[in-house]
Length: 632
Image 1 (tube, one colour):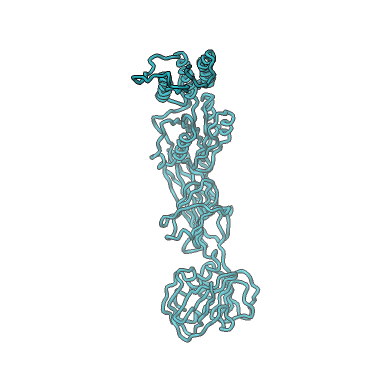
Image 2 (image 1 turned 90 degrees about the vertical axis):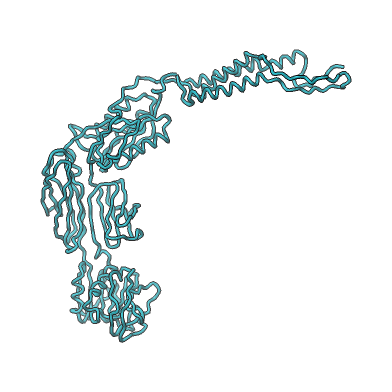
């Protein structure tokens, strides 16, 4: 027998306190009573006041005994006295099932997840019928599939619906979640059981510790395996039409392996290499290939006789190498040709002024020292336009000025450092509110940009006919203008195939977090942190995540499964299935009968002893509550 709600010291303390109060009430003397009389002439004053003495004998001992017994029975009902063993009373267990990517591996005739489900069903069947079980699926996140439940049908259904994902196993997260669930929700904590292969990263295994109530049911799997760890692609810095490919693979087994790897673009092989991998070692290789077209880049490991093939193939979608069409209307095109042919990502067309068409849409139009009757519908660059037809009003002209200030905090003036450039015959503009002054002199603005649709940039001088002709500032200025008008023209791409979880991104430089966007393929924003040059974000679901910072876009295809480096083998824990519990309940509740017996005892005390005073008063002919008077 044992108490469910109270411990034995608590029960004895409450019982002793209540019993003492009841006994004290029986031993206390009655208070003095006031009687109304007609006169005091027949009373004589007492020489000594009466001495009050406590009773030394109980007037109704059987009533006291009956009340104490009833009180004991009610207190036993509150404490929930049970018949049986407290060690085998209903407990709340947490069943963690390994649902990481590795559980999709085949071992023998079945998958590891199938064997784990069978082991989980056997564990549940071995528990007493009253025990409750919470089912938790563990990969990079701990996901509860079922709250604490004693219905065996619901528990087996949650187990049968467990399938492996593409994420690695974070066992520490699952153990912490299980311990917290038992602390908050469990009535009587039982075991925390992990069923799975237990493949985790080696750095996690070093700091992982098992709780005191932990049980491990290990699912053995294949030992030899080779898989891809990472595939990364980015454009070469010296040739925008060339892609640099980086591939890393790991040997998870104990035998040295030589594995071929084939890389194909658009279905055609572009490279064939071989990994010579030592046991428990990782190796990488890189190569370059050239293309301007968009297509699928597929990396595949050769036949390795592995039973887990999910990480032997990775696919990335490479974007096309786009070019921004720039139409230049000029009477002297040879002066501008070297500048625009030197800017990558620009497809320049040089046309005479007479062939100007205002309805041309798409791309960028450059008007060299002339103003058409109808302004272009596309985005436009104006070089030294006629003062009366400039899209930005010309306030004055100056024969000789010095350019001494750039708007360095704006993309149009980024990287421009030249100062004190002497210019002849310049136009000074009068910008409107909202216009951007890119360059100015002491006399006023010299280059003004107007945001909107379309965007317009007006230069009050011709750089190729001034002191800027042979300076690096000139091509950089035009590159900034094209980048501002067509950001995709200079967007740098980096694509990576990896696994879900925490992803660290190395930025080119420290950047304002407000200028960074991290979003899924559906456009949903993800939270992230920035520490110095490192950006970190987390995702628990496979898919594509884009990191946009300025004109750089990093695409992460988080669909490549990654098994752990090592198998966790803790010591001093319970292993395997527990012994099967006997059929039927292991303990019985008695509080219903105890509460009923206590209530009947109090009722019997009231019937047998509670109405004695009324019977005595009725026998003497005195109405209850009538004041007593001394007869004269």
